[in-house]
Structure formats: structure tokens, C-alpha cells
Length: 200
Image (tube, rainbow, N blue to C red; front, side, top):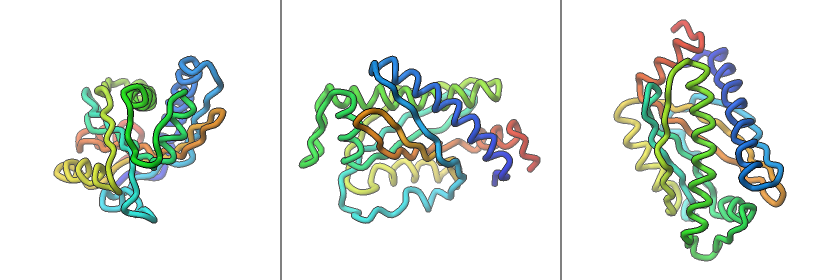
């Protein structure tokens, strides 16, 4: 369990990473972009994700493995509407009818996820004086929480908690809420606890 002061410091690091991600996205899109982190929480795996109002809804999950001294997985799940909003802001188009993702739109989502994941993990690793290297993100289109369930089942073999960063990506014509989940390996969670000042 992480103490509140540790989560507050993690939130500070996450906001720094979000600021860097916003600057990178702004340069890529040639328009102002900001990422506002509203909360950072440690949540039991069985409570992730929140139960959706419509469990049969199509979702888009972006996931990447992290190697280095902070191993684990980083994941973002978007509703199809939020994914379409994000792709639209990037100049593409994603169908709300069947959730089909073209090669260009998939590349847009992967690059956005890569910027988000790299910025967060680089900020955390730099703060701790360690290294963390996210792999190229995968894009999964699924029904309800199926993609999450697969990742959480794998994570549950090693840990029972995850660090959840809730943020909102703000740019002209786009404002989806993003729940970025870091599923740390037990070693990584121990490192975060020790290095961010948690005595337990």
C-alpha cells in the first residue's frame, strides 16, 4: 500500500510528464494541446476498470509493455466516442458504427499513446534516477472490458494493485478523458514506494 504523501509525489511527477506530453503533441499537431491530470490513485486490480454503463459497448485499448528498472504495463482504454474524438482532432476519421480502424487512424492512436506512455515513464524514471522503456503500443478494439480483463489477469499473477492516472487531453475539437493505468511489476511498485519516500 502506498501512503498518501507517496501518491501526491507520484501525482507531481505525472503532471510533469503530462506537461511534456502536451508539448510534444502540440509540436506534432501544430496546435495547442494540454493534458490535465486530475487524480492519481492506487487501485485494486479487481476494481479496474469501472463497470461501464453499457458492458456491450465497443472500446479501444492502447497498451505497452515497459522494460528497464520499472517493469510492467501501461494501458489506456477509451470509449469508441472518445477514440473517434481523438482521431478527429488528429485529422483522421473513425467510424462510430463498426469501430473499424484504418491504418492511418491506428498509427495516430499508436503515436499518441507512445507520447503519453513515454512522457509519463520518462518523467517517473528521471525523478527516480532509473530507466524505463515502453515498447511500441498495441491498439485493441474490443467489446466492453475484454481487453482489460486479459491484461489484468496477467498482472494479477504478480501484483494486486495498479497506479491509475486520470487525465483529460485538451485541444481544439477534442477533450476525451483518459484513464492511464500503470500496472507495475512487484519490484517496480517496491521501488516507487521506497524512492518516493514511503517508509513502509
